[in-house]
Structure formats: structure tokens, C-alpha cells
Image (tube, rainbow, N blue to C red):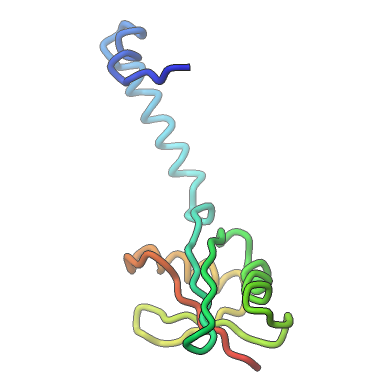
Amino acid sequence: MSRKRPIDIKEELGDGGSTMERVCRSCKKNIVEIDDGDDEFLMIKAEHNIHDIAKFQIRPSAGIDKLIEEVAKRLSFRLGSFKLKYEDEDLDEVLLACDDDLRLCAKNFGKMGKSFLRVFVDRK
């Protein structure tokens, strides 16, 4: 199946593109209403000490439990034996303890213009 260029679609519609523009505006509106940022992947670098770093992607909508499971699996820690923190825009280390913390972190992450989120793993 060949891809059609926007100009080809305009010609097929035969109305100078107004239908296409209306459809595109409608799609964009629906995407903006549905997408609250939770479905975008975050690149995570989970760091314990200087030498133990795991890199992976996760969706914030997956929740804090999924993040904790991934960190435990990749760094070979038992669940419940560590806590997670991240560095916020004020350079403070902030505890990641619940889904709301993760959502807030993900929201602020996008505003900071970083390519990955560094998560610090503290053993309890």
C-alpha cells in the first residue's frame, strides 16, 4: 500500500482541502482532549552507586508499582528493600512513593527538556 501525500488527498476530496483541514482539526482536538501525557514513554536511568545503572522505558500510566518492579528486576533487588527518588527542577531529591508522585514527576520532566529521568535508588 502506497502512502498518499497531503496534496494527493486534497485533490481526491475535490474541495480545495477544506474537508481535510476540518478532519485534521477534529483529530487534533480529540488527541489533545484524550492525551494527558500519561501515554508517552519516559526513559529512566535508575542509579544505585556510581557503577550500577539500569536504563529502560516506562509509561507513567503504568504506575509506581511497575517502576519499582522494573528497578528491582534490573538491579537484582528485593521488592521493598529500596526507595526511589528523583531530582526536581530545584535540584532537590524528591521521594517517589505513589502514582501521583510519578505523574507529577513525568509532567515536570517534560518541561525541564531532559532526554531521560534519573532515578536514585536508596537501600533501606
